[in-house]
Image 1: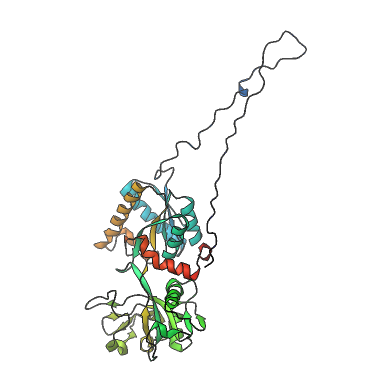
Image 2 (image 1 turned 90 degrees about the horizontal axis):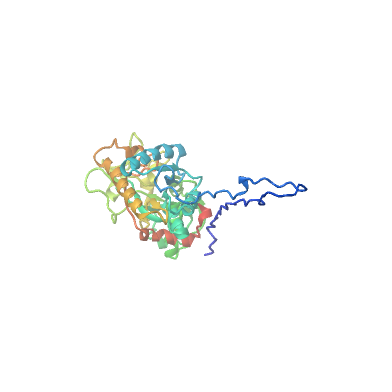
Length: 374
């Protein structure tokens, strides 16, 4: 894979110029040349100490920079981010400043440019690139409805004889778009590892549309996001369980009056097919899940590579407490901040390690993704 240079560091050096004083004045016995009167302005001015005594990180003069990628409305992020800002200040005594850079790439660039001052809420791919670029370090990953991970899924016609990912070789492939993590990039790696070369690409512009392309016969298989089903009665779905609807429930699958896709009384479908029922109410009867991808870790809270360890520990403790307030109270401030479904929809957080993002590193390498692609 050809790699482009991802980072250039601009160092600005401030030069303080000291003016040096003019000629010495003195009394003279001649009158042909008037002597210059000594002045005090000729002495070199005192140098200022603009670089000495830099303000302490977390002070009002140097607040900690909290960066959010612009994946939803910026005003929603700013207002919700300020709620988090205040909660962290109350817990730690530190000062924070929320900002929303203009792009994913700009967020990463700011973290690398201010390695001691920044913490950022960045997606998994962004984290991998930022870690490769300057050593940005992950602390937490998002939890959504009990899961710190998500998946891609492969969809095929229910009546097809396709039994494995290897059987997809040469078949036409519907996907949302080439920048979709679960809809394209992760499946691309899975196909590559299986030695599969897909046939005609069908870019549909959305996850439900990719499912509909399979439903309509516009493509032989499709890839979209997978969310585990919600089982209202009985044991909840667990990692390792079959991803698709149990065979004995397939015929019962249909959207209810609210548009939610249920199979039987208590099995609710939440993967991309559930968003296609307006046009295809019988989509579960016609389209099945062939396979799902390895787990994809959720988006991150990461710190600049030189962020002070002591301050980081304080912030991590405060964030865990902030999220934990929702365990017994749905009216908690977290749900008005990053937990808001119009914001990032984090229902909680959990510690994360760099190694958890190794699968995404494979995607970065295989797909040739770099900072410009963000």
